[in-house]
Each structure stands twice: as structure tokens, then as C-alpha cells.
Image 1 (cartoon, rainbow, N blue to C red):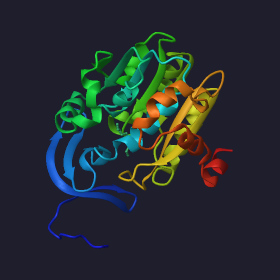
Image 2: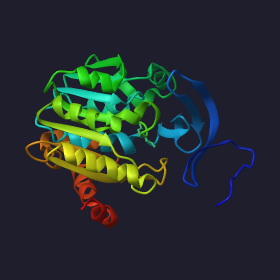
Image 3: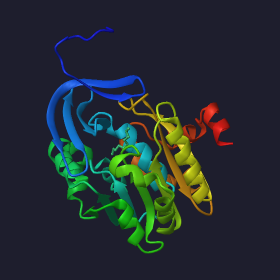
Image 4: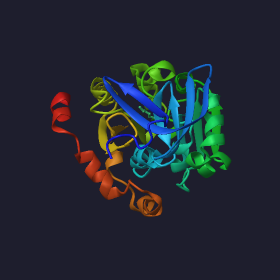
Length: 286
Ligand code: SPD
């Protein structure tokens, strides 16, 4: 069936460079916060879904494709994972994956837009799951750039940037000063993780992020996977560390504890994803 089943249904599209990425559904919320337009729809295919400024962020039946790949290479490989920071991540999916590790004692979630958290808790409760009630989670409504700038040296075992695309409130999260602060606040053996966009739909942004992270950290590598609702469906996440590429060496005890509840991530998948760099990206990064 290559035509709409029902010509009267409502389609919600993200437009990127002459292509549109759409889901069919019903609108539940459409409001403007101080920072952005927040839209939540009930989609036919992927359950309830969130858009910020008309760009797809997540959906109930897509979120694990994204959050598992952002979180587990970092948390399965870092030397210690007692104390972590998430910048962004207001839907709660990244926090939920982090808090699956019993070793995590304290997790700071720093989200600039309280409305994203409130609406996600109300309309997308399965994405954050138990994270919202977990006493290890501290929610801070603040600008992640300021938070990171004022944090002490070497205070986190992992730092995860779960942002929207680099425009509007997220623009400064792809900037050298911010990423240098992220490195400064990481403890030895710690891992930095950032969503690094699509190698197809956002090639320049994708290459710029990898180049920047490589310039700042001793070791940095992207993985490639898929989030079918995002532009092109082809996505990437970049990991970095000092001393050695800790993210390439998952601890088997953690892998065994986490894998059974993952739908995409496993240590085998991760190994392949780090190898899955397309030839044109490899050439561009030389
Ligand atoms: N173009 C989509 C980029 C969104 C990446 N972040 C999504 C946030 C999910 N927690």
C-alpha cells in the first residue's frame, strides 16, 4: 500500500531538505513554552510521539532504538558509574536506561524546559518509566551549558548529551567551550556520550560533531544505528574518553545485567555499530 489508507487522516511531518518524515495520528498537545513549540500526537504506528519545534524527538515505540544506543556504550564501559549527568533528555528515556544500572548512585538530569518534562510525564509516562520516581534522579531545570560551566572538576563518571538538533535552545550544546567543560567535569575513566545526528540528513553537522569531540578527547568514535522515525532513519551517537577508549570495552557483568531488557543494544550489536562507519564518512574524517 503506497498511498494513504484514509485520505482524511492527519499527517505530522518534519521537513528536511526536500524530504518529509511523517507519522499519521491525532494531535494531543500543541503549545509554546518559553523555549519552543511542543507537540504531542497519538500516532498510528509508533504510539504517542513528541515533536519540538516541528522535529521528531521520540515516540513510545521508537524510544529504545535511540536511548539504548546513547546510554549503554557509555555505562557498560566506564570505569565507574556512580555519578552521572544528563544534559537534555526531558522525556526521561535516557534517565530510565541509566537507572537500570544498580551501580548508579546519583543522576543529575539538567533540562532547560520544564514543560517538556511535565508533558512527557503526563502523556508519555512509559518513556521515563520508573525513573521519575527513582530517588537517585535529581531533576534540575536549568541551562545545561551553565550547569556544566559551574560544575567542579572531575565530579561525574559519565556525561550524556541527549539534545534536540543543534538549533534553538540546543545550539550551544554542540560548541567547543561546552564540550571542553564536559571533559573537565569527567572523572578519570569516565565516558562522554552525545547524539551526533544523521550521516545522511545532517552530514555536515554529523561530521562537525565527530571532529570537535575528537579534537577535545584523546579517543572518540561514533556508532551507527537506526531510529526509523527520524530524518533518513539512519542515526549516530558519539562516545569519547581519556586514557583509553573505555567505550569499546563493555564490562561483562554490566552487559549481563542489562542486555535481556534491551531491544537493540547488546555487546555484539555495539561491536558491529562501532565498525559500521560508512566509507564516505571514514574518508571525510581522514
Ligand atoms: N532529529 C532528532 C534529534 C533528537 C535527538 N534527541 C531526542 C531526544 C530523545 N530523548
